[in-house]
Amino acid sequence: MSLVQSAERAEYLNLNTEQLKQLHEQSTRFLAGRHYNLSDDDRYALFEQHFYLALLVGDSREAEITYQKLADRFGEDTGRIGKLKSMLIDRQLGPKDALMYLQGRPESDLPCWKARIALLRDTGVADLYISELVKYLEVVPTDPEAWSELAEAYAACEKWGDAISAVEEVLLCAPLAYNMFARLGELYLAAGDAGEAISHFCRAVELCPVYIRAWCGILVAISKHKKGNDKLKAVATKQLEKLIKEKKGSEGDIAAAKLILA
Amino acid sequence: MDLTIDPSLRVWVLFPIFFVMILVGVLRHYATILLNPTPKNGDAMTIRQQQFLMYGSNLRLNGVNLSHTAFQKRQSYFVEQFKAGKYLADPENDGNNNPSQMLNDPGQFEKVMDSMKGQAMMVIPQTLMMGWVNSFFAGFILMKLPFPLTIRFKAMLQSGVNTQDLDVRWVSSLSWYFLNLMGLNSIYALILGGQNQAGGVQAMGAGQAGAMQPGIVYANVYKGEAENLALANPKSILVGVEDRVIKQFS
Image 1 (cartoon, chains in turn blue, red):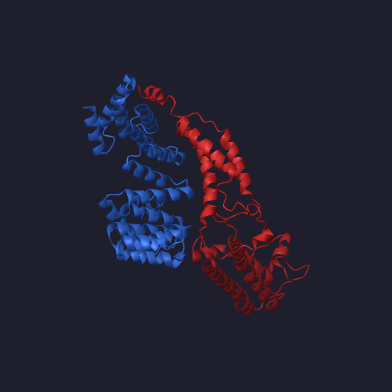
Image 2: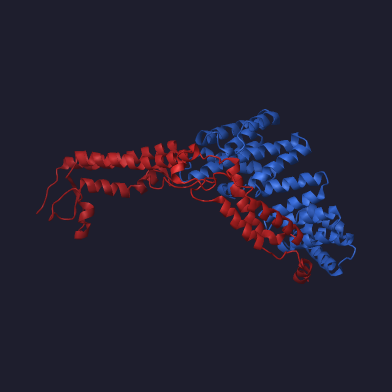
């Protein structure tokens, strides 16, 4: 995996501890050397990635050094740098100080605004968190991350209708997000509308045929539906059995599928 | 007719012009980086104005993902809001931002200044350099190319020297300056890396997100979007999806 590629796709967010350490080491070694043939964009993307990696492996001193390099180049006024700084403060002094820092940034600084709301999730009350998210989305209605956070926040207080609307907004920004279709199915299931749930799970497997979670969802939804749908049930069962046999999916998913089939 | 060139011309004119050109290029690169404006965040209202336009087109294009009722709910709401101009950044001054008034607005003025700085970084060193070459080395013949050329190259290689029958292979000082100006890019790339600003040509332009372009009346843009949105009538993708899945997997 090339370093630039992993920075572009933010792959470091999906790695396990071992892989993280490896990538961090690779990044340290590379950045210590001379890298003349990199373009500026790539070089600073690598520094940014190195910052996150250092935070993830718990080396806040190195993160600070890397942050300083970025801040020297771009100044502290830009939102992206401000976000990094808040993460650094969060690690070194705690979330309260990070919140204080972020509150001092101007409101038009979107990345910092978003980081502030993210901090509220862990420290604040659910109502405040939701109202801040809504305020943010009134300005930036095309941010799928924020919409899905809002959906989860509503779901956590069992406001299914609102959660469903929020996930629908995610689908407006990211039309092929099969996991979001499946999530919508789950929310409909929780709200007690098994019919809608079935069609959303179906759309999810139409987009991603190996998505075990959605196949399971179809089976569960059919069992709760009044009318039932034997044909679809047979198809879903067959597909799940096939996926289990071919071991396509994580161990947890496969175990869950076995449980549902049993 | 053959000319003999004083070898000290090479040491005191040809190489100095070459090195000074390289140095000026390197200086220009770093000066451009220093003068580069830090990207500014537009104010929240301007961002919102653009975001909701994007949202409108998202809704139109990806509305197929929603169920019919969910789409209609959003459609009727946003058509109303767009028509009423709820998301305009500055409803009173919308469309009044013509170039002459732009300079009264400090934000716009700064943007104009930034692009001026970029242009100044290109124009000033070139004027100075050309003045230097012209006043110190006017009319100098600096070198002879080792290959013959057609007469058409005369204008390119002998600017500043008004002799009609001089062989095209002789290169004048001013032309040497121009050749350096055009041809040093690969040397800059060697010294400063691929994306350098030493050439000073690509310094301008690059409008930033959230910047207001003059002359756009956003109220009208929103009215147009409202009309498009009102006409949209997507067929929900969720209709008949069960049958499609059964057909696909059995």
